[in-house]
Image 1: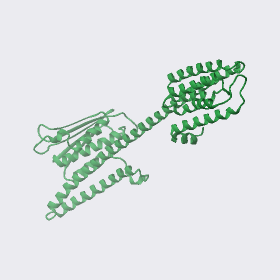
Image 2 (image 1 turned 30 degrees about the horizontal axis):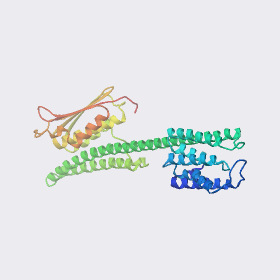
Image 3 (image 1 turned 180 degrees about the vertical axis):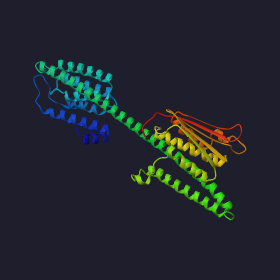
Image 4 (image 1 turned 90 degrees about the vertical axis):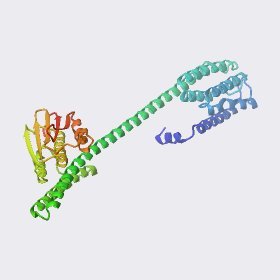
Length: 390
């Protein structure tokens, strides 16, 4: 059966198909009634027509009421044989056994097969002498067995196809869920990147704008310097935001994306922060040559966010210390700070601390943030990593 025919049959109501098969079986049996009766057989009369209907039409209900259909058909078969009507009816019984085996359970199919064999044995034994030859006995029992085995085989194949289709659906659903999870993870990563870029840049711009506004009438040179810092910060932020938005658009234009930041850009970050008016000291030890790109970017963002927090809440000087060992990247940012008014920042409620904790958690690292006893704030992060060649 072709795929098109199978799809067409799947759309047709099974009850209509069963009714059509039942009518076709009845027509086939009635067409055989034109044969002359053999020795000892009765000619066809009204009772034979009624029994013909009992032999074929129950097929229409074999899905909904298999035992009623089997009882009517086998009863009609035995009555037809006991009354010695000709010709001997068997095709409709084989078709019913095949249908019950195909659409029923294995237990029901075995019971139907046993009942059918018993009915055929009675029907063959009831034939007039010379009608049922040994070949007829063998052919009838063989045909019933073939019908039963064919129905069981098709049922098993359908069950396997259904299991395969269900597994395919489950695998497709799992793939879609993995894709959605990957998209969500990537969106969260980009959201963290945008937050780090925007938070740092806007903090610098706000500070410089305040300085420029304050001195614009008294110190033109200082105001010009503040505007220059705002311009540089804005351009740098726009470049990085274009890179991130390019990732979202899946652009193939590599020229529109600048390389991801890393520890090699800390000097530029410190210089930019100093132009905003915050004093920054940078102390580095160890080589970052074998630090993986992910840990490299995470370290840069942690320093950037830490300086942003000092710029907004601490000061006047931030001390940054970065140490690279063979397996661990350590970052510490401290400041002398302003008078402590609350510990809200330590609770991690701010988006900046949440983003840093998430970055560190990706590498199974640790991050601590706490007020210093003598004033100010201390941020410490450790990022374990496995070396790789950059």
